[in-house]
Amino acid sequence: MDRDFILELFSEFGPVTLRRMFSGYGVTADGVNFAMALRGGLIFRVVEQTGAKYEVEGSKPFQYDTKSKTSVWK
Image (cartoon, rainbow, N blue to C red):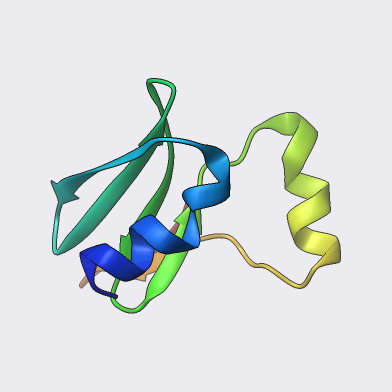
């Protein structure tokens, strides 16, 4: 995802800023980093109140593999 696409995608949130993060961008609105655009996908920060809503929509937790294990962020 390129920078302009991400800014347009979140334009309804009001002013959004992007910061380079790993090989993608951290997405921030009103001083809160709420998402990361990485490898052509979006990873949203999940709090207790929103986790179940994401699962109902078919979203899964972010995970990555290391040499010794698979780490899952919940």
